[in-house]
Length: 179
View 1: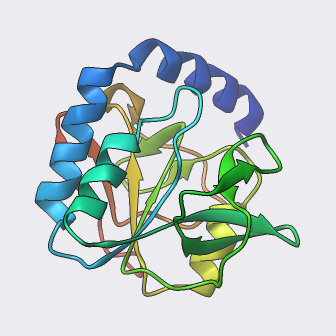
View 2: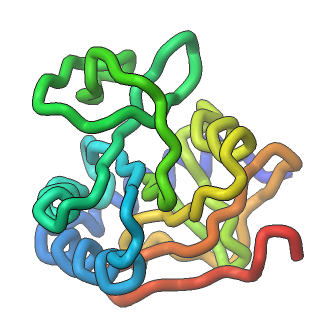
């Protein structure tokens, strides 16, 4: 079995090298073109070298879409409406201080790498895997830079596959999850 922690370090460094505001704008444009007809979005608040979401969130709100963000509570990630009042969460990531959990049509999630099957290498906390297990109907979309694509990643039984990944170069749709 491949060492996922070593892979995380490798791809975290690579992602930092790939990050750019221009690529973030292209990712937002591609995400809106592919999924903009949906009405509700669960979007992470970008942090560090993650593909930026600020402009995307701003445009979704301008279009009157429901925008929710992650909030950690009792060790689990909740999808709660975005408010202008944010506080530092467990990892220093801004999150709403409160809010009732809702289910959105599309979840846009961060990642360190993704492969051709839709497997996603995350940070290792399992928050998105557990969230997706509880909300199987949510469309799972990773936001990444094209250079984060790899041929194959290690996959474990509990790992939740993505339906698509959006990069600055376009949208990659993956085989159906049950295939």
